[in-house]
Length: 240
Image 1 (cartoon, helix red, strand yellow):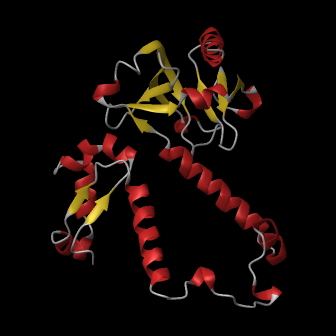
Image 2 (cartoon, one colour):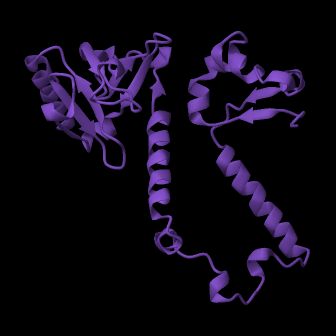
């Protein structure tokens, strides 16, 4: 057990510091709710690192460590010369799955990783950023969660969504009431935005936004005019 403490780092963590500071909040409650090992967590301090250069510090420390080992005359692993047979080497990623018959499994893992990456891109809009994310166009839209089915009406969620003046697509979390960034301006700049074929959705007036490398996101407006106006606004934002 890490009784000397757990250290949380990263730029996103700093922006979400309020979650760690609230002892009765969601994060700290989940952190301490670990069944029979919960008492042990009382002995594990939790620290939020505010420095932005932890990666550089780690690289510097490792470089100094390697230099000391080199000056002491120790042979580093990277300097060792070891003859290896061809069959001991790991095949390139493009061949490993095909050779083992696991290409489909690898494709599923890649898809799952991309899905996780998309979820992690949901950025919280902090109090100090509210002016930057002020709406220039806002309405209610039906939004399909990434685990939902386009053909299941119960999977669609009615949410307040807006285009911010910095070019991001944002929405309000139904759970916390906080503003979140769905797609950034950079995402939307390279996105494909178009109407969804009616045969592929149970909702009328559906459109989608697809960023290369990620699953498309689906939205449904209250009317055809509303859908067309949303698409127009998003495409105009792409030109800026």
